[in-house]
Length: 186
Image (cartoon, rainbow, N blue to C red):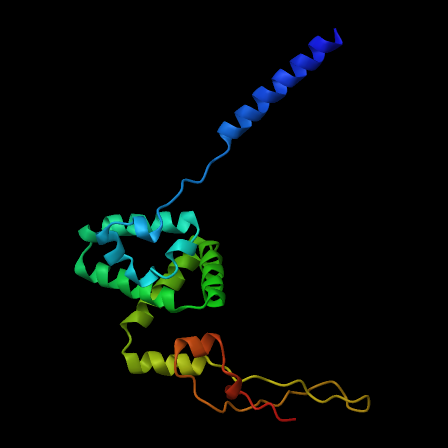
């Protein structure tokens, strides 16, 4: 009797694990750079150095872009190439930050997303000089903590502002300030 019970449990366990194995979503292997077609390599050339280290889901998305690419308008093709080049120039930390910002944007309510999209479109219409001016105005100088001693009252104190030494010259510098931008003297 005990043997039949153990055998039944073993069979049930085998069937259960087999069912779980087939029900688990399996990630489809995506081709390596060497396995891509000539046309795919031409389209995805800006990310060739990162391709073999990309997660399968990212490769799959880019292969979808490459598939639609020939049917895109020339402006769309240029935009894709520009974005791929810009993305390939980012450091891993900058990519992580960009992904976080994208996820944060996706979580906004629809009306807020539309507002952000409208502002972005307005920004895109600006001349390059005005864009640069806005980038510079966004770079805020760093503030230092006030030197508070036990005898110093803590109300109505504003911390002194350290002047920016070097102007911000690129979008990367905006995100990752150079150590030369701030005066570190006491």
